[in-house]
Image (cartoon, rainbow, N blue to C red; front, side):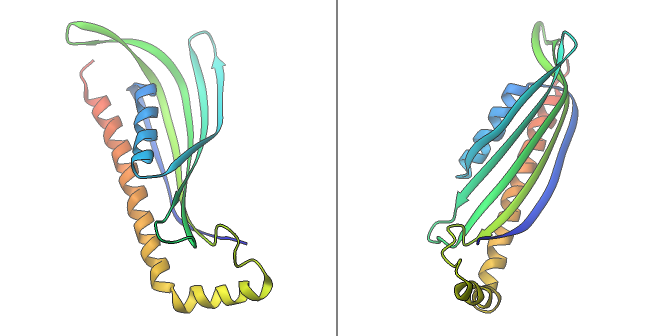
Length: 170
């Protein structure tokens, strides 16, 4: 059975004016640019009154490590958007439609060892523990550090995107 090591757990939360569609596409494209496969496992909208809604989205992303079939990166992204509604704002002389609400996104990053369950049998499982602990320990630590850097970079880019959106004078 594969083993999962939690490397990162973080949160991004922001309230204000933004473009939900643009941010959704930006985060999706950022993950794809980092060679993650993105699977949307849940999308739910709950109408709140006549003009606002809450949105819940779950993504599961996977990234195979080149040259290794023993490791895989998994990132979980859980979106919760509260009070999402359209609002008109002025940008210079133009009036444009944007979204307002609260974005709350939870990120988790896991290093998966033996994702294909090649070491599943009892004796091989015992050997794998020795292999992980004594033979490839530094490689595991290197992959954990690499995944930590990647998820921190993705989170920083997402925060920067929302900060730039929030800096416009509306």
